[in-house]
Length: 370
Image (cartoon, rainbow, N blue to C red; front, side):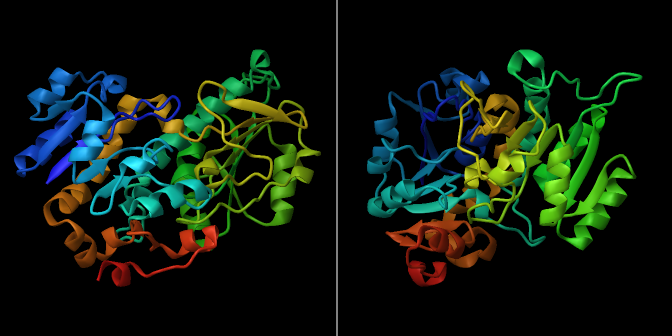
């Protein structure tokens, strides 16, 4: 199969779909890889590096989209890329379609087979292709909050960990999954006062064992969300319902009781955000203020550390990518975990939570493939 890697064009996105080492794996398995010139510039990988790994270099994205059977990206295709996709072609990337009906419509009209990293599962009932970026985003959320808390960024003027005799910042993490756990780890490491809100009793027990008292846990209710957000200096939204829009857990009314200069970091923004007042921002203009509360809602947080992120992502996506390259649609028919990643096929929405969020008809993946 001919596999294509276009350069990412989303604002401030410096990651790349395949790093040179992954290209070498595809080539070793008998596939041809076409990489757009300078696609790896954000991770300091030159065209020469890709050529040494066995890739051919394309002069532009058009050449990649026109000639390749499978397109490997990082972020969802932008509006200018939708018309370049076609029926019979596989798109393998993050999609986050639930809050993005325009993209969904563009992909449906193209006829492409769109496999979303964020809904591929494994036999542990996890999301293995989402997990590495969740780890990065969780850790970055605390870095972002620490900067936003400083006075010259409009924050409360707090040092996250305090100093002897001065209390640290109070950090509330909503959600105890991968993002929330890594956010809490970073915040604890900086010396913050950390509370994790979570609804799963089993997960609450795991978090209690993991943190050994260094972070507090609390069962997540509306009362708990209200109490904790009002006392917080930082609130990290780390809520995920696979494929679906994130629930709005922190309402506009809750902001009224929050501290002036407090910081909300919405890591769920790719799925629409879990704060009622959230709207997607960019690395170039990452924050805005509502009711004296700073909002950080960058939709591609891991793009800030593209070297770490690209390699971590490739470690996770390579296995399934090779399956798609070697078996084509048969890989989706035969592997139930990879098939969970199929969101759109030949104009049909094949992931139920996405169809529900978009208000369109749902077609089971196997029905669409057969």
